Length: 250
Image (cartoon, rainbow, N blue to C red; front, side, top):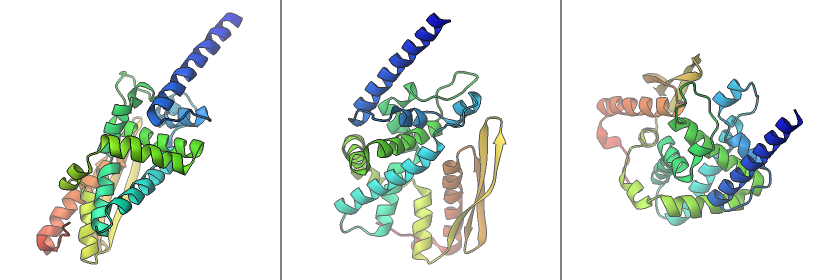
């Protein structure tokens, strides 16, 4: 029994050392509170399987806000003459689910993210994106805003993103719909009609309302995807209804 405990302790210490090394190579800072990062890398499916109340959802919420603020601040500084619509759309392209998934893969999150799967699958797109946001939240709590901002700007935006290319792409339908509604003084709302469990995953049903008029509803395992798809289809309906000339351009 004592030998088994010793082996377990040694294995834990080895795992912690590896995790610390990865965190430092990823963000440039040695972790002070390693438990924050462990929580950031614990998906809700893993915590449910291990019957632990600890998962990364709270840190994801915090990281989403911190990341959005840092990106907004950076874009505000480097594009002093661009309007709100341009800045909103470009920020959304940087922090959307696909972009965060790609960044998470580049930094090696797949090797450290704890999820639960009966088929030993790779972590899903949204589990990776959520973990990336949670990591930002952990870094903020561990090292503060300034160091988190330095990591986001120097190791993410300047290293892995081509802003000129992002400016030329136009695939963020939530931002497009928001700009359309702002220009036309329409009231836009995304309503969560239901949120139910389907096996181990939640299914979100989202519907777009413009001036309290219902437009497209869409359901998906990811709330982000449901919102994006509902926005895309609703925008198509609005353009048919009001005309494309009302859309905002850069």
